[in-house]
Length: 436
Image 1 (cartoon, rainbow, N blue to C red):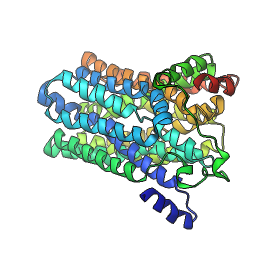
Image 2 (image 1 turned 120 degrees about the horizontal axis):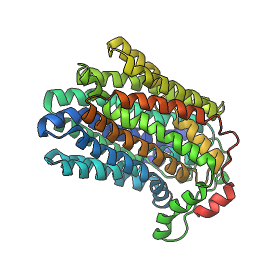
Image 3 (image 1 turned 45 degrees about the horizontal axis):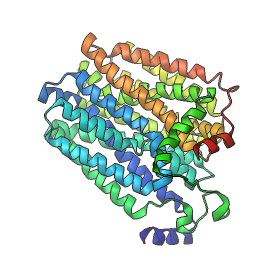
Image 4 (image 1 turned 90 degrees about the vertical axis):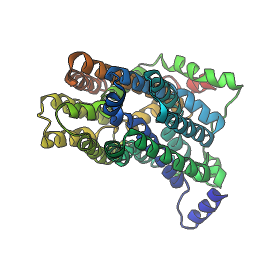
């Protein structure tokens, strides 16, 4: 098979096959980020073509964000039980089918069903849990760097897709732009089919950073499918006794509220309110993506070397200040550039240290399930902002109160990490027993 041949060729050059798996995962997460972020480009065109209200469109996006997060813990269980490769292929097929059918939609309920429910489930089957699972299965050394790289795929998806989608939408309409995303999803599925493997042992390798193949014990799923579905709830019951879990959950709620739900969804329409063209606003988002790529990679490197709590304190604090600054700016090119630099550097730089804290507090064995619940908090925050900001725009004819509130909440999240030192997670053995 292709994976075996590639692994053999790389072994001769002393290159671990885990980096190929990382590359395929990066592509999948990049394309998925394009599918998740694309509706932000389409809000105004959908308003113009169908006469839909912005809060109606935002409700579909809010449902998508919510399902994207709530599926995370179950996605981790499905990956543990059925394999990453199968789950990713099913997820890409669901997303592609929903987007393809949406080309002929003409009712709000169809938008909610396809872009809200179906795309939400499809993207949720992978979510950020995919990157965390790959990093934990394939790497024991340089795990923070790998997490940073995979997390940065979201920024790369934004950088690659949004300007192109904005230009295609302006020139040919939103349906052509959706078609481009469908093609990209198909290419990603081919890469997964050819090169993705579950564990290093499948290609005769140890985990990167380990000396022998048997040095890391894989997670073994016991019981039937029903037990597998209940396992995330059992884990949630156990970790809900931990103050550390609620700090991570609550701050990640604010993270999602201030990123995916607000900036990714409403930044382009916000700029339109101030006379900035959609293509130019998408370019500003792409610039954020450049700085986010650098910041997230740097965050992964830093999380391997420094206390994750202090990293998160600075990330949330700087993000909050940038969001508070935006409503008071004049939305000139200079002001938006300054915002894009400071906001972009820590857009999703929070992920590597959050995953690291999760593994430290709750153990590697079920860390992807626990992180799935923490990520659910992220997407609940995103859903709240996606709908809330749209409602604010409809009722008050401005987005600015939503942006200011997000900035204040980010500052509060930064302060929350000052109390995390004394908060312990449950014993790892107890967590493993509860999730088995």
